[in-house]
Image (cartoon, rainbow, N blue to C red; front, top):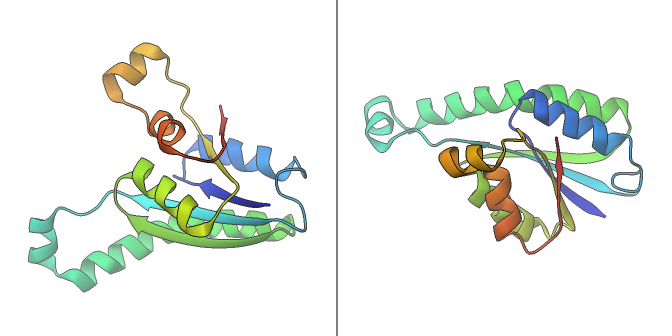
Amino acid sequence: MKVLFAADGSKYTKKALAFLVTHESLAGPEDEVVVLHVQPPVPPRVKSMVGTSTVNAYHEDEAKKVLDPIERFLKRHKLQYRTMWVAGSPATEVVRAAKREKAHMIVMGTHGHGILGRAVMGSVAQRVVTDSEIPVLLVK
């Protein structure tokens, strides 16, 4: 099975990752975990002021902060994995990556906001569940 694991670097990501590696039926030695980190894009005006290479370096540095600890963790658990990052809308990019990677499932942490919280703030997890054509496992 191929699992797309959405990682934002929060404590909810850590909980979801721990859940994933402790359930071999989701991510065992024969399975692949594709770890995706999505960053908000830098506004075009800022990008034009500082330059594309500076923005790319910034995104790369920020992605490493999130992805490096996850890579170490997955190596310790001897799982097959790949990491990637993109800049864009988190829910859109997670669903897009799952399609592109032909993932069988999306796994992600959720902040666990109630109905009022989702109504006021919106929810990446809710949008992924709504827009995804494959199963989504939310870990709270």
